[in-house]
Amino acid sequence: MAFPIGYLLDTLVFAGIFGILSLSLNIEFGHTGLPNFGKVAFFMIGAYTSALITLSGKPFIAGITGAMIVSGICGVLISLPAIRLREDYLAITTLAFGEILRLILKNEEWIAGGVLGLKGIPEALSLKGVQATLYGHVVVVYISLAIFFIFLRFLEKSPYGRLLKAIREDELAAQSFGKNTVFYKAQSFAIGSAVAGAAGSLYAQYLSYIGPDLFMPIVTFTVWAMLIIGGIGNYKGAILGSFIYIGFERGARIMKDYLHLPVDPNNLMFIIFGLLLIVVLLFRPEGVLKEEKVKLL
Amino acid sequence: MLKVVDLHKDFGGLKVLDGVDLEVERNQVVGLIGPNGSGKTTLFNVIAGVYKPTSGEVLLDGERVDGLKPDQLYRKGLVRTFQIPRPFRKLTVLDNLLLAGREQIGERFLNVFRLIKWKMQEKELLEKAEEIMDLLNLSHLSDEYAGNLSGGQLKLLELGRALMSDPKIMLLDEPAGGVNPTLAIRLFGKIRELAETRNLTFFIIEHRMETLMNYSDYMFVLYRGKIIVEGEPKKVMDDERVIEVYLGEL
Image 1 (cartoon, rainbow over the protein chains, first blue to last red):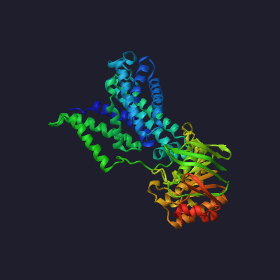
Image 2 (cartoon, rainbow over the protein chains, first blue to last red):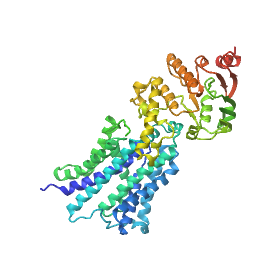
Image 3 (cartoon, chains in turn green, brown):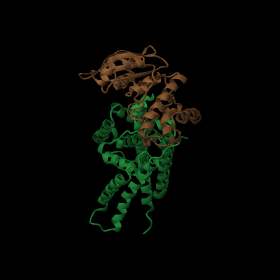
Image 4 (cartoon, rainbow over the protein chains, first blue to last red):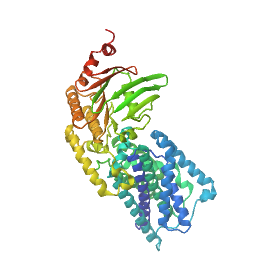
């Protein structure tokens, strides 16, 4: 049997896109302590915004920029009512926001096709042939991943990153040293949301179709699982978590063809992954890659 | 420098501050003592902007500052430490100090990429932080997570962070609480020295009257939300009312 290179490339694209999402959760929760349980909402906003822009004939770069701007603004707006309160309020507000938004998009056909979603979304790079196009996707996704990784590491290694971590550690103490913590929390949420929006844009152009059912709350929990396993507070860990998760998910699908198990391997994947999550939380609660001491640039 | 006029703070039906009047003079070390539950920390929390007063005024250099938030008060030169230290546990001792630096260019998102500009400021802050760590004997812990420090070291770090910000007035809530007596004496010695050499003003809550007595210029005694005695330490310590609130009726 020929090596399934297409499958591998597809896996890489997914791991890359989810890696970006995981990075976005890391600046919000890993560094600022903001539990965003509506991650999927900003992923979805990015995907829809980008799809609508590129379907209207604009280039992908306009799509991804628009996605980041709209997601970022929505991030600030949704965080405003809850950001002054305790973290759990923010968690529940964002969780509800994601579901409400998804249901609106599903039921209001005039916005973006309702339950049928949007089809024929143009690719970022159109190349000849299926394989070449897949390679093109890998390049686009990994260039984006590298840009966001470098950008976020840069922030982490600046006084700005130090301040975000101080807010995570003790907000009142940070305020006592003159820091306007609400403003910085909103900024961190905006950055995280914008990065998630970019991931949504990449997702939409890759799948060429998006619909409301792609953006169920499970996406949020998947990203959380990635970050917890990879290492909260560590950007490399965030990406590693994505690779571990997607690797497990895809591995289970391949396993189906080789092993005759009494359990459907797709379900087995959830069981194994659940166990992995528990093992990590028990024995390495900080994740595979711990948060590092950061030396500023 | 700092003036509190007829300050009240109620929590529901509980009157924790019941008309507090006091004045802290510039470049002095002023003590605030009182038995448990007398309202000392609440008074600090109201002055430092954690709570809004029910009524009354807080004036800093003649300007009304009651109701301002902690970050706004910090910009006006008032900085406080906490009774139970609140370090940034997963930041190093050095980063804890650097963070307390005033008006940092690199803390603004759009300035993050102006590397040369913020690195210059960071260098100055670093020199200052090293000087403070030297002063407080924390240099050997510079690269240690603050979360790994002992109780006494955390108290020193609290003081260090407050010093980093070049305040006009520092409110210290039990800076020597939980610290061994030798270190406490050293700590108060440093405070005295700082007040004299750096023209700083200190307003200190302290439980151990006898320790504070030797190092402060003036003292207030708070009891059930009211200042019952004030004056020079010797005079305060000999006051019958003070003995009474601490030891009961004689």
